[in-house]
Image 1: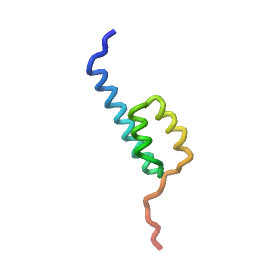
Image 2 (image 1 turned 180 degrees about the horizontal axis):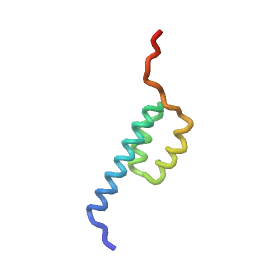
Image 3 (image 1 turned 120 degrees about the horizontal axis):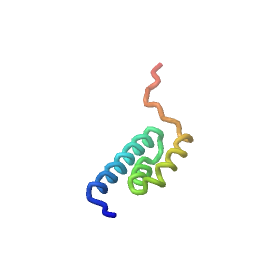
Image 4 (image 1 turned 180 degrees about the vertical axis):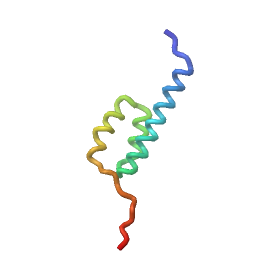
Length: 68
């Protein structure tokens, strides 16, 4: 079974895409976005499920300013 360069490229793009999405979501929730993004990018099969489970404990932080 031969794996060509296109397969690696698609896998890399998918991992980087998920890493970026996870990092942006973690930043909105006040979590360590660098850790979650890099971990998801490098070890997608481990970090993505861990992130999905742990994100429920960190509600999204509102960016709206409460003006009187």
